[in-house]
Length: 150
Image 1 (cartoon, one colour):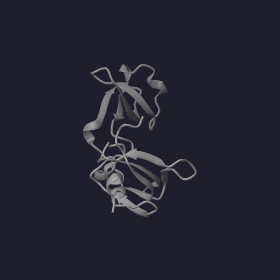
Image 2 (cartoon, rainbow, N blue to C red; image 1 turned 135 degrees about the horizontal axis):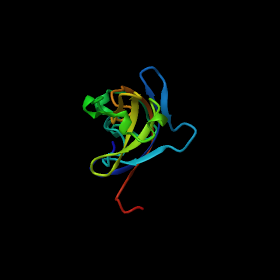
Image 3 (cartoon, one colour; image 1 turned 30 degrees about the horizontal axis):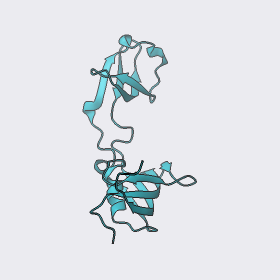
Image 4 (cartoon, rainbow, N blue to C red; image 1 turned 180 degrees about the horizontal axis):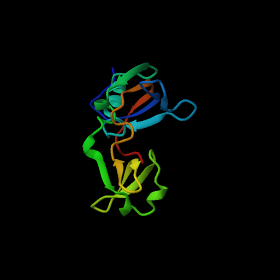
């Protein structure tokens, strides 16, 4: 039984897919993912699923949006007059771009709609928000982590 009273460095192979079976990411054919438990480096449901695993164990988990990248939030849609956007003619629906927020920080957004004589719609939700995700997991190792390693 793993000791969950300490933080651990976890190494895991995974394949992530959408409900229709389309694979969005995998470690197959490359190095496995390594992260520190409890540091919010992976989505919550992924971390919870791996917590109960032993090295060498494999399993498949299905994560609802709330356990992955969250529900799609309509409050994160932003509309602005297209005429106010420099070089708006270069924008393509589906494109990911960075926009400056009111505090001067760049935020990633997806272009949803561009109307030459109207408004442009941006979506600041994570691109995978609202999606149910499936992960095929294989725990490679779980080692105690003291935080002293570089």
